[in-house]
Amino acid sequence: MARFAWISGAQRMVIMVAVVAMGMVGHGNGLVGVRLWRSQFLFSFLITLVLLLIMDLDRPNRGLIQVSQLPMTEAVQAIKLSVR
Image (cartoon, rainbow, N blue to C red; front, side, top):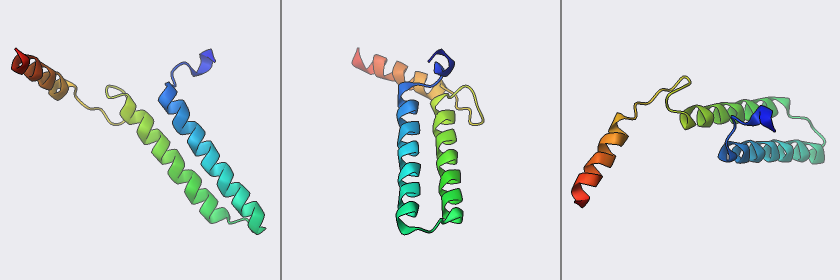
């Protein structure tokens, strides 16, 4: 489990939901008896993009999308001042 220490608990849950969803698509295709490879590929691609987006947004200072924490710290300071 040390290899996956960089994956948080919430990310593990999202990955598990994706695995279950893809398993259900595969099971559904097996019940129909026809392999719909285009829809499977599209679904897998979209799930992968969503997972990458979630993991990138979860770490605001690293990755492709970088978000400044300055507005959040200013909001915290404003709240602290308004409570006094």
